[in-house]
Length: 264
Image (cartoon, rainbow, N blue to C red; front, top):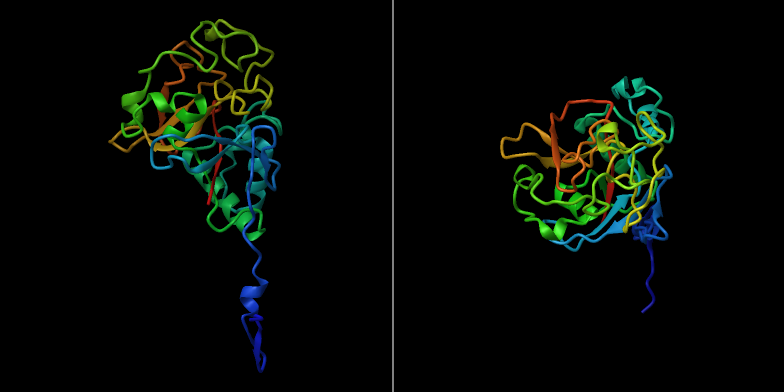
């Protein structure tokens, strides 16, 4: 049977559905990450355990850059300008002085923008990573209980993203002087300046702390931050299992964020 469009007067039954564009098929690999409208690149991370077990979760290979956040600031009225005040914070450096609320607002804006542009599908969503997803990215997700609070898991596992040795080896990341390690940057570094990890991601350790979705504890007064920073680089700060807590409205020059793209 041949499908036909039935025209009744000026009403074309079936025309609207015929005009709908199919949802884009988002694919990404470590070698060929998905690139969005801002030039942010996303690579897959295998998620085991937790609510998103086995889901297609793509991590931004970089922390959100100042240039990405600037596009948001120009397009949306009322964005707090404190992010502009960071000393020496150039376009390719991670944006800092952004709260958890600022970061989630950026993700919501980017989702709306790219759905409207047909860059992502109606079920695809940019957001902050969960604490457990972040653990999967750093390589300890299978060693932790996804059902316990970040507070209960903080510092429970030994080891660092580069292994078990201390201090960090050369090129491991942008760390402060407490790490017994030096690099060329007094504060933040351009994203992607240091070695890439097994998933194709940069700066999961050092540069800036990264906001995660979760509450830090059952008290629900602080959110989770992961990864250490250019400022806080003591041995316990840089453990893969370490969690920092922060008020959702807190802004600091050593705090930024990384987006994930949840596909489908």
